[in-house]
Structures are given as C-alpha cells and as structure tokens.
Image (tube, rainbow, N blue to C red; front, side):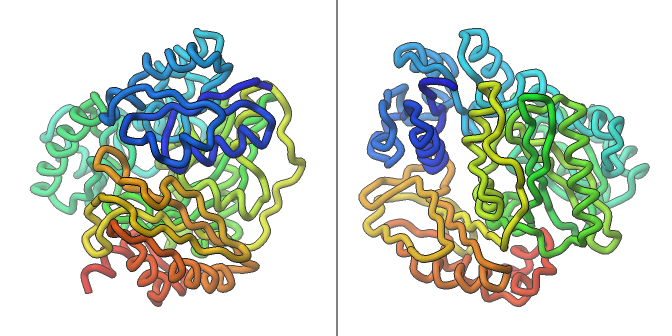
Length: 445
C-alpha cells in the first residue's frame, strides 16, 4: 500500500478522501489555492501545500503544479477526486511516468471513454444498448439536419468531449437544431478544447439512472447497484437516491449486467460509473457515458452497502484485493447537494458563511466542504456540502431527510435548502415516478 497520498482536489471531496487515507494509516497530503487556505480540508490533511492563486487554471487544473507538489512532499500516489484533472488521460500518464500510483483507471481507458462517440461505438460492439444516433462527429449544421431526419425528432445535441451538462440541448425541429448545434460547438470548443458534436435520439419522460462499477486488480468487474439521478437543473444533478424507485427488478438486473460488460470490454480498474437513460414506458435503457472516476453521489452507494469506495480505490490501485466479500444493499439512501445558489433560479452566489449548523441523528451523513467563517468565492463549483440520509426503506429515508434539511442552518450565503425542502414535499417526488423534467415542471408552476 502507498505510504502517502496526494489529494489533487478541494472542498468536500478532498475532505472525504483525506478521511479514508488517514483511517488506513496513510499520510494524506492536500494541495490548495490561495482562496481555499482556510477551508476544512487543508487543516484535516497531515500536510498541505499551496500550489497557486484562486484561478483554477493556475492551481487545481495546473498539472505541473500538482506534480511538483507531489515531488516536494514525497507523495507516493495521487487521488484526483472528481472534476479538475480526474478524467485527464494525459495527467494520469504523467503521474504514472513519475512512478506514482494513480488512483483511477488506466490512462488508455480514460482516453477511450472521454470521447462520447467512441464510447457509444465501443458499447454497441459490446452489446450494451445505445440510443439511435450518430457514429462519428457531425461536421456542420446541414449534416446535423440530415442526421436528425434519419434519427427522428426530438434529438439531443451533445459535445462529444463534454461533461456536467455543459452544451446539452434538446431540439424538436430544424430551427432549434441549427441553433443548438452552433451553441454546442461553441461551448465544446471553449470549455473542452474540442468542438466535436454528436446527436442522439432524445427520450421524452426519461429517467437518468447510473450503475456503480468497481474493476478489481484481478480484472473482475463488479456492479454495486444503481443510483437514480433524475432530479436535475440545467442537466446537472441535484438529488440522487438508491435503489431507484422507478425501475423494475428485471430492468435493474439487465442494467447491472450491461454495466459489468461495459467495464469488462474496456479493461476497467477502480471505481467508475456507467450512466444510462431509461425509458420507463418501454422499460428500456440506453448507454449515455462512462465516468472514469469517483462520482459526487458515491455516498449513497456506501450507505446501503457499507463499503468505503475510496478505500477500495486505493487497494485496487496498489494491486491488493478489496476489503469486502459481499455487497448486498440494505435500506434506502438519498443524497442532497447543498449549493450556494438562489433556490428559485439556481444562480450561484457567494459570501462569508456567518452560521453553519449541521443536522445530526441516526442515518445522517454530512460531507462538508465549508465551515462557519469560510468564504464562498465565484472561482469554483457552488457545492457546499452533501447531505446524505439512510433509512430502512424509502419512506423512512425521506422522513429523516425532511428533518435533516429543516435542521441544516447556513447563513451569510444563499443556498438551495428551501428548494430541497420544497422537493421533499412535492407529490411527484414523494411518489417516486418522476423523471428528468421534474425540476422544470416545479419551476413552471
């Protein structure tokens, strides 16, 4: 096992990784920007090193600065968390070239899955269902119109190298498609450095369900259950739960088997996620993408399985067996992303946190990135904390969640806690038969 691990991230995920690294008796090393010097993760690590100013491109996205920090602290491995450099194949290769452990899948796997078109083609060859769409980048708007006529409207327009819902748009006719295509190309070139765009059939009334996989050191791929991720704003997740309340046992079995096949065909190692679009009416699912990293919502899987996924990542990267023999889920878990944003329009905000009081009680887990007195800036994602709740069943978990959301006090910055409380009392969410349109419908009232 590695003697020391450098955590190349910030906020709640850095704190979460540091916790497991230290619990395993290893040295946890944090890197931080000037804007983050007072955040909890910096103090929680055994050692912390400043790597640059607040601008992400000059700190957390600066591969050379991160690698230099690893050299200066004599780190033996790098855990990228999620976001920033987590799915950067070139960075993963550089880590390996310096004889450091990379806590993630092989760089080749990251590269193959980073291109959504390539990923679609690989999954189709492996027998994993994919939605009707294109098999190569769409070069111009005229071709997009031709392809959409073949696929059938509505279509989803996506940056081929995209993530986080950036640049996604549904188009119901030619005019909307041309606008969405040009917008997607612009977003893709500016944000991802790759202007390629793909088209897929847009499934109306769909649910977004993902499967947690774990590729072991011996080549075995396990599926650790699914997570429902359909509560989204601007195609970005807000609430996740497991098990999904909207899929049948038969569909669940098929999805888990397909996720294992997806991991096997690419030689996956470590923790990853196979994301799917589910058509509830047809009880069919389609492959969306593979995330080659730890997901924001991994705590719900940990709560129902009792498995520390970060520990398993470290063990697998070190060539060791995992620490569990069975992964039978127990009960129901829900994660709520507590964001620094207004609860009506979801516009991010900031400021100094004057009050921070977390709920406590049975079945409650808080993964926090901030504390009282910290300042939330505009440089990073507005995620403040993850409120995770476990119960004997879904109703029990939701009752605990209502009490926990009501007891979570954050003052000084606006948060989405009022929205989360509203969601928990919404009949559609309570019933469990919701889809990715639930938040827009709530806001359209």
